[in-house]
Length: 294
Image 1 (cartoon, rainbow, N blue to C red):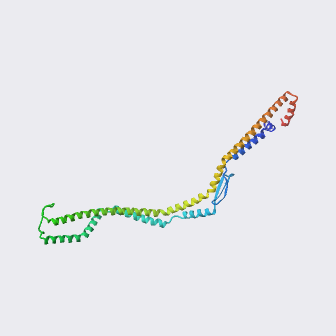
Image 2: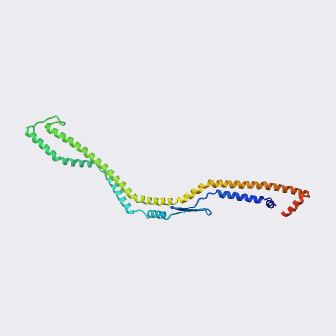
């Protein structure tokens, strides 16, 4: 009976029209990215029915991407890695040798070398001093004014004191030279170690760099894809406003239909009441009711 009343009063039709209006409003509010074509970088299209999307790089970008990626995926230069490793190992060996060096022994060798260099000059100076002392008759002159006691010629004592100071300075210089040389060799070893390590890692860095270039080209080719999503996002507020208007229209139509249906239903109710009392308009409603079926 309810479906018949709905059909007669128009409530069913109004409800369906309102439903279609609200569904249309929902469709309008959906986020829909835009297909993009004609870009130098490629194109993008979106399949709304199957919820799929894809982008296509232009032939030029595909060529660049494939060139970088093929080089990156071809592997590293093993020969360069081996060469770098060799330099790195030599640098480490040089550092270890310098670090474990006996500085005192090295300083002693330097002192010996310096003394051998000055020995001829010293021998000549001592001979000249002895000749002068003998020629002047001062060879036998002595003095007890020196540490350890005994007699020594004052001029010879002065010469020996100066030579002793010179020996002390040469010993200090020899040790400083040995220590500085140790530090320099350690620093040089570390330098070669670092250079070798950089050379060893360079092939890997080259691969990483080439892969990054290929990825950059790929990302550039996604420009149309991102553009389409951006255009779709920019259109959403307008779609939502349109959906709101569609919804308001459907609601207004449904409200008007309900009011009309209510008035008609009220009229039918009165007619049925008259029918129950018999006569007049009631007979007419009775006849109409016969159309609805029992």
